[in-house]
Length: 306
Length: 256
Image (cartoon, rainbow over all chains, first blue to last red; front, side, top):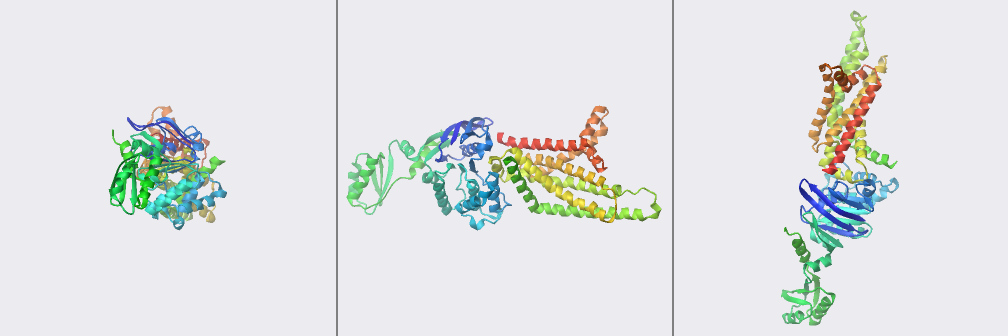
């Protein structure tokens, strides 16, 4: 659906992005991850045709964004860094304008606007002027604007900035709902966001893609076959440490209060053996999860200034 | 068909914004207040002159005595007012970052420029329409030849269009509305000042060229009631030229 080849953008001598190549398949949800100034926004801007690249090409649904911009752009919904809202318009009026601009037919107008309003929970502010809305609401209006024409491709630049935790959760649900129907690229520097929703990650640093894979295999690669597992139990029994450590694939284990932290190779049979041995020990298995700090580690490692 | 459609979407959005802005109404207020004051004075002066037996026999031309000062007043106020109307056209879009929306929508920069230009021209023409009420209401109480009046208004209409395109160009060059209005005013003034060059050339070719390029010369013809094709062509092609420049500037933002 999205095909990026050799994308380069130079600002004078400095390359904001340098020879990016990636593909996004139809219906995929891809997280675009990178530290500030890595070139995320520049890439998004080029993908949407807002900016021209110095070199390289972008194809959206088979249309080159520069050779055939109108056809390519009609497939895109875009939420830029700053929501592109007109302060002197009412929310419903603004959404109508955007929908008409994106070529939504008159007969479907009300239906699509109502749907977007409902999805972003904007009913209460529908007839208010945008200039009187809070930052979070503006962000939601910006999101509504991106999805109102139900485009095939959604490009979202840091969509959860300014949203409160409830809204962030809402947004994740919305992403799940949109996933599959739309091809989505989500740029962010907030790690849990990608962890919660993205199938595939593109990690970008200093204008180059430094990693491109699914979250699970990235974790495996980064830990070089090691996976940190946290097991929470009802009754910690120190004497079982040894038998757990003796399981094949488990490296080191230690208790921290009621939590058992251990490193293992991450293979399915290891995890299975691990869980059954904990159950058999009678400690009372409450929770077992792969440590969330891992993505952070990968991120830090990949984006470390070299 | 679809091409025209999106242009209209921009056009109506812009038009709505003009007629909703307090600035537009306060400008209209000062504009009509000034016009009323001046029109009433010259009309009274004209009425006194024509009823004065001492001055009988002298030529009393309502167009020269009443309508010309009136249209010159419109011309003068418009010069100050147009940059204030056009300053927001692109500068504000850039400042509010709504330009991102326009440039990533399936719409060409030509359509954006066209929609915006036509809306600004129409909004200002509405003010011109208000000014027309003065001669038209005079028509209720006196009989006179309307031809020079129509000529003057056609000239003003074209001049507004030209100034709109200049103001739009200025607005496309910056993201500060204040600077855009200043720059726009400067552009409009420079176009008018070409007329001042007419006498300053000794060579017949250059003075003829300056005469053809001078907006003032063309506009004076219209105000005198002579509608010449060269004048209309000059105004329309200037509008096209500056709108084209604006379109290039908007498009070039992708390459920076």
